[in-house]
Length: 125
Image (cartoon, rainbow, N blue to C red):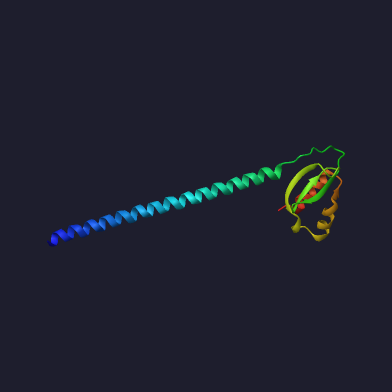
């Protein structure tokens, strides 16, 4: 009789060990899928931001001047007509000095391409 209970006890311990092992594996796989999905979503957002930052609508001529404006909290570069977007930047307007923020309201004038890229280099992160 004693041997019978020993085999039953050993069987229950073995089944419990298997259940714990399978539960651990299931939890690990579920957590791994969540992390992979989050990393894919973050990579997609970064890719979309990179594409958006490089997109420009206008083409500048040699004699064109530029205007910087606040567009949705970011500095955007427009051509001399103040309507055609030349380049969108990742520069936050709130990070700029207050005097420049005020100039951006009506459009900050930039005369040459060298001045433009000098400004963008100074204030980009």
